[in-house]
Each structure stands twice: as C-alpha cells, then as structure tokens.
Image (cartoon, rainbow, N blue to C red; front, side):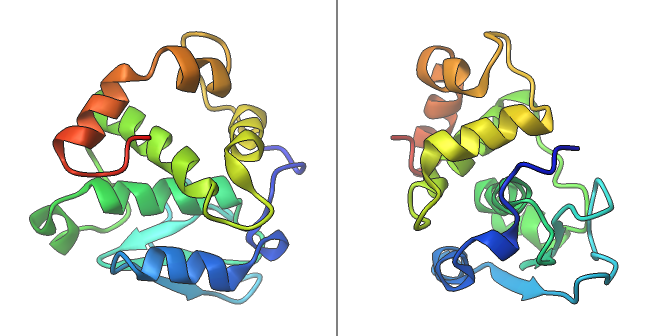
Length: 154
C-alpha cells in the first residue's frame, strides 16, 4: 500500500457524488474507522453492494473509481445480485481500468495522469510496465469492450 495516492479526503466529494450519481450509483460516506461493506480487498478499499459504493475519507480515489466502474460496466441483472465481488472476465477488468482513468478527467484537480500514477504506486500491473504505457499503447481491447456496450472509450 502506498500512502502517496489521493484519498477521498483529498478530492472534491461533491464532484465524485455528482459524477457517479448521474449514472445511478449512490456513494455512501462512512465514518473514518467504520468497516466498509462490500469491500473485496478490505481495509480502506471501496465496497460495492447493489447500487451503493461504500467509502471512507481514507479510501483511495483509484479504488472508489475502480469499483464504481465495475458497477458501470455491469448489466442490470448483475447489479441486482452485486455484493463485494464484481466478477467479470479479464477484458472487462481492463475496460474497468480504462474507464476509471477517463472518469478521473471529470474530477477537479485529479485528471488521468495523476490517477495513472496512483494506479502504478498502488501496484496495478500491466504488460508494458506502467498504466500510462498500457493506456496509450495496449488498451484497444478495453476500448472495444467499452464501445460495444455504449460506454465512454475516449
């Protein structure tokens, strides 16, 4: 775990709530030391249950965006049964990573470059060695997956 990544306490909460709320996902803010329902990784990582994203002030922004993008990439049937494990295959996981980078551009003071640095610092792993290299040169499968489902891909 890297302490140099953006945490939700460091970003505009209203912008995140508005961004995700416009898509139908509710952000539930928890007390600083509360257990996070639906957290796959535990600790401060975001959790998903149904149409709710659970976070705390110390939740890494990349984690909140990643879990939110899993939800955005699901159909209604998967969302209805969602609790903790978003599932999906490898290409969907790549699409989720790609989409979270795009969404970072909609958050004041964040942007894709910062989010990609945070993803690298946290330990996301891509064939080309960095999130930025993957995003720029090796993510056509993720873009195609998103386009096929009518989700943002650029």
